[in-house]
Length: 63
Ligand SMILES: [Zn+2]
Image (cartoon, rainbow, N blue to C red):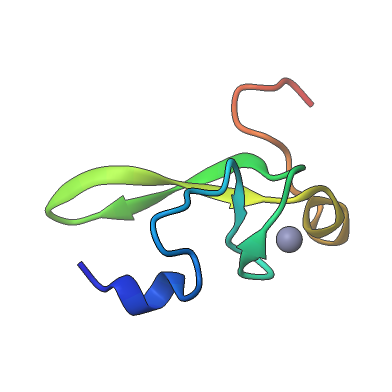
């Protein structure tokens, strides 16, 4: 566990995290999964502006 990757959080868990601009966002939703070789896939989240810029569609939502 590398806690330095969440500097400043000190235990506080943000409701949503945007993996694209690498910051917390109230509008972030899961848009993809990160496949890992030896563990379960983890969700990849993007906020509204990042989704718009990159044309991302939230997982589980029909386009
Ligand atoms: Zn973002």
